[in-house]
Amino acid sequence: MSIASRFPHLPPGVPQVRSRWRRWVGVTGLWLAGWRIEPPMLTEPKCVLIVAPHTSNWDFVMGFLAYLAMQIDASWLAKHTALAGFWGRLGRHFGGIPVDRRKPGDVVEACIAAFSSPRGRIIVITPEGTRSRVEEWKRGYHRIALAAGVPIVPAAIDFKARCVRFGPPVQPTADAEADERTLRAFFRAEMAKRPALYKE
Image (tube, rainbow, N blue to C red; front, side, top):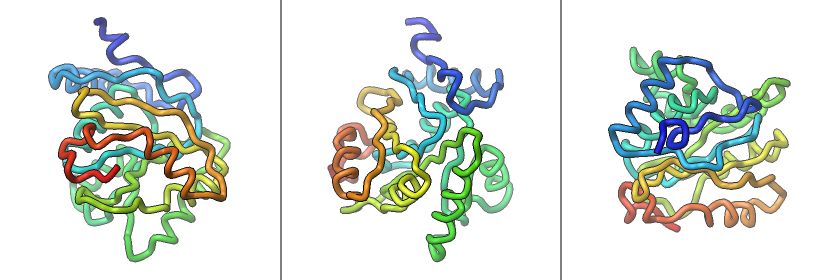
């Protein structure tokens, strides 16, 4: 399998950072780990990208390598304490947005405002909110997408198949529970690094 087919490029309409070194680091890391990026690719210029299952720090490592390989221009939410100090500055350089969980409303409003720009915008969220097992997803991702009028795209870090894959976009409606059932159907516990920590 060729590099181009194993690590396809995003289509032109998706926000991207053209960077040879990002592409090289991402592709090399995924290649050495035996991973690939599976088509169909992300096609939405504006969306909330939800990533699951989230059960291990390795989710971030593989997701970040895919982010570099695709050269995607995206912002992602992380605890404000994780974006402190040197590594925090580096994380913010690569799109990290610090989230103070004591003020969740501020984060939602800021994300909604970011989508008002005519430029493409992708915001990445892990709806589980933690690596521990959770019974319910946090619904901030849905509130943001619904208020901004943008689709929600599921993305799986699939450790069993060793690939990153995207699901079909879901246009949010007033029925958040129904939308979530549709989105969760894309994910399976066996995809997780630690399957016992993901609730289907």
